[in-house]
Amino acid sequence: MLRNRVDEFISNPKKALFILAGPTVVGMLVQVLYNLADTAYVGRLGAEAIAALTFSFPLFFILISINSGVGIGMGSRVSRLLGAKNLKEAENTAMHGLFISIAMAIIISILGIIAIKPLFRLFGASEEVLPIAISYMFTILIAIIFMFTSFIINSLFGAQGDTRTSTTIQITALIINIILDPIFIYPLGFGVQGAAIATCIAFACSLALGICFIRKKSYVKLRISAFSFSWETIRDIFSVGGTATLTMLLISIYMVFINKFMAHFGTEYVAAFGIVIRLESLATMPSMAVSFSLVTLVGMFYGAKRFDLLRGTIKYGMMVSVMFTVAIGIIFFIIPSIFLRIFTSDSNLLTLGSAYMRINVFTFPLMIISMVVSRSMQGMGFGFPGLIINFMRVILVAIPIAYIFVHVIGYGYLSIGVAAVAGGLSASIVGIIWLQSKLRKLDNEMRLQVEIEKAD
Image (cartoon, rainbow, N blue to C red; front, side, top):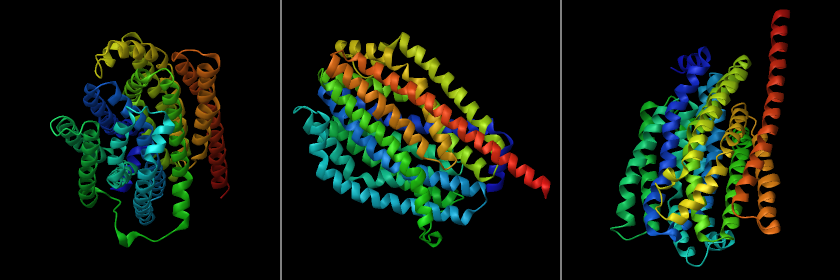
């Protein structure tokens, strides 16, 4: 089964990219729809409710970032081990990922509950928004272990190239979330907190279904007998996953600062920005799915020593993903209000959001280029480049420029979007140069290997 899967991907990398990306698109759509469903239902409660979700989003994303890092690190190592036909160590790696995830969930839940109120104050939440945001995140933190462990299981299926199963799990959880959202928000009277309760129940169901599929369908099993403590395994998971987590945390930091800059203009600006960001996640989702698929493909090719397939696969993935985001960006630029109306009918929010969207679309292809570079590097086991690229985009360029525009020069809120474009452009240029350098090094290694084989 495993040999056939790896050989299938090697024989036709372009087809394999779409085999993996198709279900991944659906899976990512599910993740986006979680947020969109919450926003759509909560949006009927007013601007303060939307603002509460917008302030909660960076914290929620931090939680996802921390656990995603473990999943990415584990998945990258498992893919490379499967490419090298080492099932025993792949299962050991999967168990390490699961135990790390459980430990982190417990620690983060405790620390998060303690720090939640001062964090929201630091983010700039007003007194009207603060209690709503706290009630939402408090509920999420209590049940965070369900989210963390279910993500690890989905990552394990993805590492094997079985994105269809992980998508099935996510779709089931989404349906549960969509059904429960309005029930807890309106009839039961929980308001914004009801959206969090529905999400937690959905994650618990996702975990239960994932455990069933692991037992029945997974080639790599989660079993205690496969576990053998290894510092090398932990180091490998965190060398890729740790930098992936830090990379995603940088995005969370960026969101915190942008929310704070938007709050300088008022709550409605924060709400409008929150809607635009959710639409952005929907627009870039298919292209991001391609980049996620590259982690598995590149990892398998790298583990199998098929360096000859890496360059073409990465180039093709980047071309397809950038073309798609450009097309979607054009549509969003021309008719932004149509999409914004999904979440609000407030004329002021529509005006603010439409203007910001027309600037924000220029970040779409730049974001995807950086994503493809980072994921390709992660597939090869190099997590550091993605961290540096995003550090440049967020910390060195976007945030300082936005601060200068808003607080020094006194420009309006649209200047924040211009700063985001500048950050994306700089990161894309550096990322492409770095990736080309890494691929040239692998080409040289492959030529040296061929020469050695000929000499023998």
